[in-house]
Length: 102
Image (cartoon, rainbow, N blue to C red; front, top):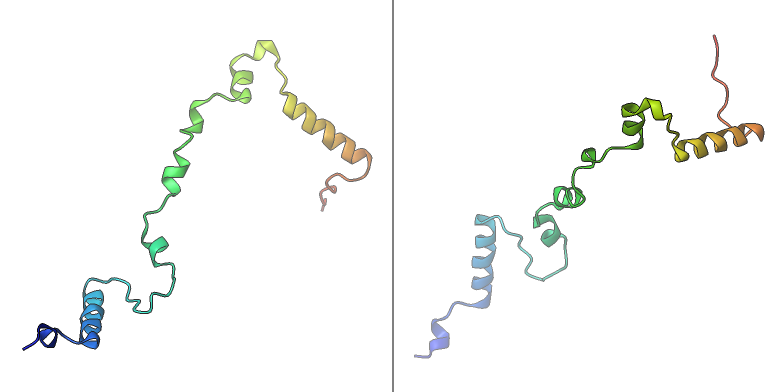
């Protein structure tokens, strides 16, 4: 008797693999078609990416310095530039419309 005759057929092996996938809740893909199972199975990267730069609350902002040292009368150059741009837009009638009064 030959060793090959004792082995299960290809269809029987496929049935066993399908049953194993059902039992262990794995993806059954006999034709090896590309799908997103690998990506969906991977752990989420959001918290890891968010924590890369550390906690942003630890760094004091310009607003904090202005609060801590009011006697210095500090002016924020970015805020000054923004206000200048708003004034310029209003001069050209490109600013925000006036609020409705009832």
